[in-house]
Image 1 (cartoon, rainbow over the protein chains, first blue to last red):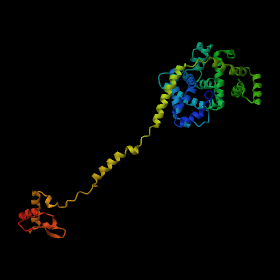
Image 2 (cartoon, chains in turn orange, purple; image 1 turned 45 degrees about the vertical axis):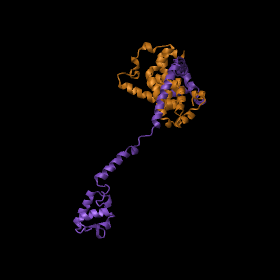
Image 3 (cartoon, helix red, strand yellow; image 1 turned 135 degrees about the vertical axis):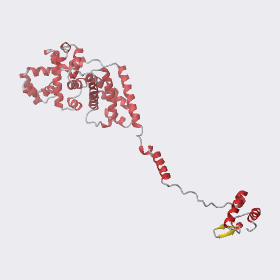
Image 4 (cartoon, helix red, strand yellow; image 1 turned 90 degrees about the vertical axis):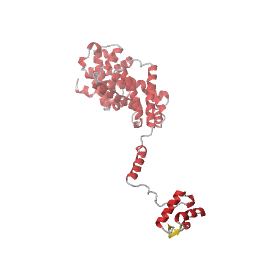
Length: 185
Length: 180
């Protein structure tokens, strides 16, 4: 159960049990609880507000469809992030079939240096968007969704050690973009 | 970057988070004393996430999330309604087709009900009109020249087989030449 779950006083597992018993309207509690977090996560992964809207809706609909597959081996929040990541990957695949090229396909050296050297807060957010997909996802899950590395590993389908190394690389890269010792500022 | 730097990559994350057991923490601390780059990384691992959190743009307004919430629940209710609808049952949907096929088979393969017997019980003479009486008389004349009708036990006088009244009998007498 996440922080949001405790705030509303209703355990995620209890809500899920009610939904599975046929009380569809109780799913509304889970939507209210996690929609902002999932929207922020999908927006960071997809870097497009409209696509993030679609991914967020699709995530909850998919979660509802497959709620009986949630075994409680991880927290519902972790499971939901994994569903969201899958939805985003599907949207990535669709986008790559089209004329648009993902920023992940652009070599880092090709990115304009002036934009990378942003130092204000807004610039910092843009720097996160320029991280490779895996590192971007790990940073988003750790920093914004507040997941433990063990949970991040579950979401990404990697080892806990790999999740930590990805995070390490992402932070070093961000510090490098910020410029020298500026990361310590 | 030394091999130790590579080895300690994941542990630096735990070190910065303060989740490393004491023994390992001491070993990492020893490495940090010798490696300025890793020491800087530990600082960054603590500071950069905090800066990212502080720099996170405010989430969309409540109205946006209310709209999105409603959109999600509409789709969820739609899924629930589809789930509640019984699945298409071929057994019952095909039952009328099967029944029609069987009926057609009965007709085609001659499994029809037996045709009505051509042997019909003769009606009472009093119920017959004149034309029919004449026909009966013709039959009687054909098979029994002496005016007897065929019965189960052989030839019988008409009045033995039919409950005829006197008027009918007179008509028959006249038709059959008075030999009934």
